[in-house]
Length: 447
Ligand code: NAD
Image 1: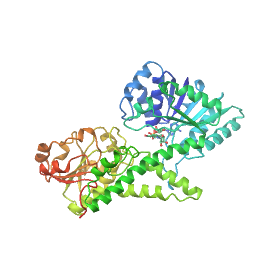
Image 2: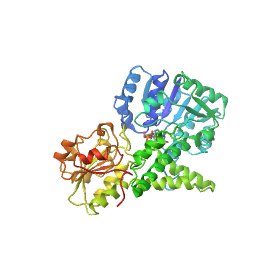
Image 3: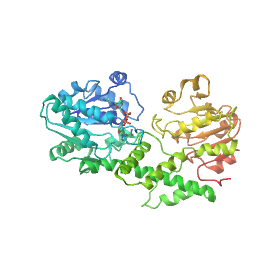
Image 4: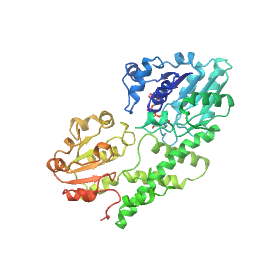
């Protein structure tokens, strides 16, 4: 099969690489010339385990191609995946300008029956807008070309994206035409060998499914963060509560870790967009509004603890930040709690020593250059080097490399022995036995 993927970000690149891995001919299109030039030379724009190998290998095999020219790609293809960004607009709604821009371009180029697949996360009703946009372009060209618009939301997790795409739990396909549904079934057959993973429904239901999944996961996180806060007022250790409830199969262990709030390019924007969609219908989504509010407060939870411990004037103090990406396994810093933590500390006069296993390059783009040139933020090559002369260490992202603390090195390097554990990664007792003051999430009395 010949597939065109438009948008070569986390989703588009992984989708393209994985389809080519299963033998399809894939052309990945992006407007970013540098990105495409780099990809042609085997240089990837993102860090994602296993992806580099897939891209390089399938390019060599002649199955994966990169271009900035959608017209060129559309000559050989009749399946178009739209995998461009849908960032939040000012009112929280998903901004569809990139999606509809691509729809226009597709309408300007198709000459044979085509299936247009919405892979981007888009609000209910978007497929209708994509269809109308393509139809309009065809009318301008005076062409009568048959096409279908399908919704195929993506559920991959950054940090495990390749694995998730190659071995999905389920593949949701919203299709209002049998012809398009059959093409999607064939396309995904290689990913569905051991059991049928395709779940067919109508287009609007599929669009809603993606938002519902993300809203559910965000709700679990915010729920647990709320419980952690209550625990702090009661002197209860939320970690014991977590284990106690996770063992109930109806609840499960996943997504009930208290922490510094959810980030990334999906949960925050998708919860916002669903709230907006809901309000546009006249229904007030009370629960989702609280999920979002709790998350915004939670991103400052560690800062609140720092202020309680050190006050609001942090001039002359240095904080080590362990972890910059919004979660382990990725270099993505979009809406990362680390950004809120670092900006708040700097506002109060502190200096930052930061380390992340893969997101340091991204961090250089995330903060203004003058913060680096004035050494308000310094990036270090190891987590322990970052501790030099620090008044406290704040663990923000729970990378595996941070799981075991080397207390003897920490004792030598740090000015004050204080740990703020934003992910409850450490044993408070062990930290205290090693002479450290420990502050976690939901595991001490609020004072
Ligand atoms: P991204 O920002 O990493 O990539 C988007 C790419 O689209 C960029 O490379 C950009 O240059 C390109 N682009 C923009 N306009 C274009 C155009 N007209 N033609 C060609 N390319 C164009 O975004 P992402 O994280 O891959 O997310 C894409 C969509 O998938 C979003 O709707 C997102 O919500 C959804 N999604 C993301 C994830 C995730 O984990 N990142 C998971 C599931 C779904």
